[in-house]
Image (cartoon, rainbow, N blue to C red; front, top):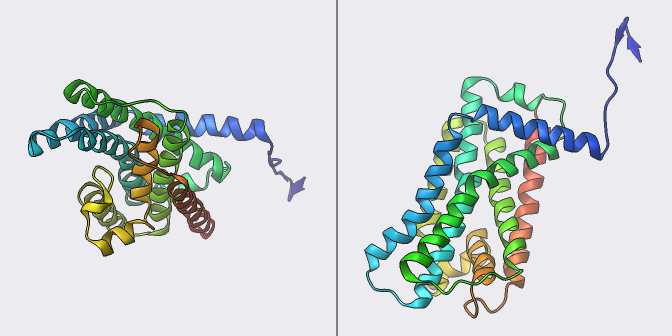
Length: 260
């Protein structure tokens, strides 16, 4: 098709095009963060290991159940902090540098862009999660197990955390506000979410609130995949996480779609 003598490129669709764009966008993300990537991986590794070892120094002798909560909680924190805290700060930095509109104008499927960003988060987060489990095993001889449930649990936690961060980073246009939200979230995740401790430790009203927030559910599904007997049912947790993931995906789609 031509318009005023100019040939317009045909739009490309299909699975092969989607995977090709996913690979290109993943490579582009890696190259963009090539200097920060090793540092981010080390920070996540220190986060996972440091949370296990540091909290053990804080509380001294702790029982087996507390050890399992700490080990699995540190694993969850390592999995989600990249997507829900660090990732949005990079998007805010793009706005400050004036490259955000350009990156969003690339002729690539939005789902491929989100998938590439999620894959990068997995690359950064997994070493920290494995480090947390290794530290718990070495320091406390934690009786961790690997069940088939751990695979969908980890994938859903990674996806939900990434998309939640993706959603508010693209919805909130002010970089300083994005930075403030990310700082509040990391404070809530570390100090006030029943990820590394039972929800019964919280006041009743706060525990009730967390039944509808994603953080407790993140801890429950991963704990169910790595321990025996601590979590009795995961149906509600998987449903809550799935709802948050879908809502975050819808908000992200709306926020990116409203771009002029």
